Length: 126
Image 1 (cartoon, rainbow, N blue to C red):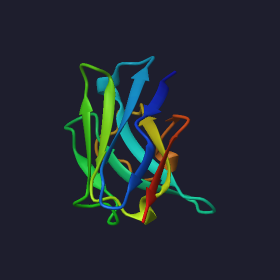
Image 2: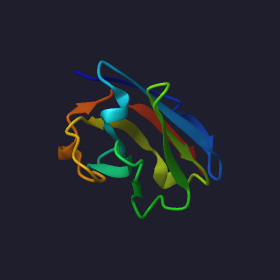
Image 3: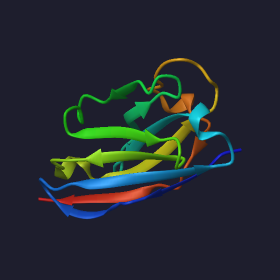
């Protein structure tokens, strides 16, 4: 079992930055592929970014490439999502997710992830 707790959401103006964090517990963090997803009001949950357990390989949704950066700190059991140049369309609840399968490579689909956090809300005003 893995527990995930997100933090760092809030209200920010367009063009601003936020850094989301996700603290994991319950299993060796270094063996987890971690992902961030988001769900805007009235829309489906979408992939944002992922970082693999094996080589720290990253992948991003096209909509956030060049603006968001995912990173992990295995010593602190934490994954971060640095979000720069935020846009109103980035407004959503952001979820952290963990895949314990030890499969090599990145995971882009929500069904790849077994464990989910409760989410943290990000609102970007125009």
